[in-house]
Image (cartoon, rainbow, N blue to C red):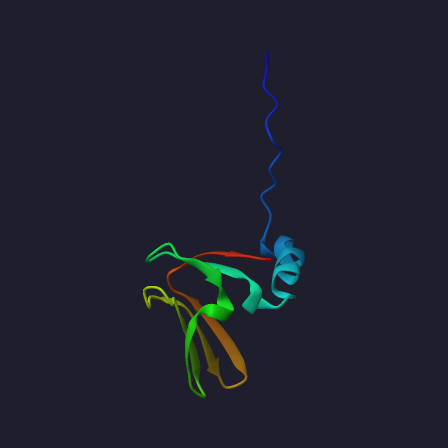
Length: 90
């Protein structure tokens, strides 16, 4: 008996536009982040943030590893992922 394989498409990044819009169109601070350093899971609102006019460094409250950094470069924003290994919506 043959097993049915899951059909999988290989397309460009435009295919995830809807998924990303759905993910980021909510209160991000309510989303649970998982730290790759210590495995702690908590809402981003519980993280420790070092903030100045150029950057926001978001750290795990349990182990202080940098989860991610948001950088402001003029009018552009850049997101650098650190030890954040998962982000899940409420």
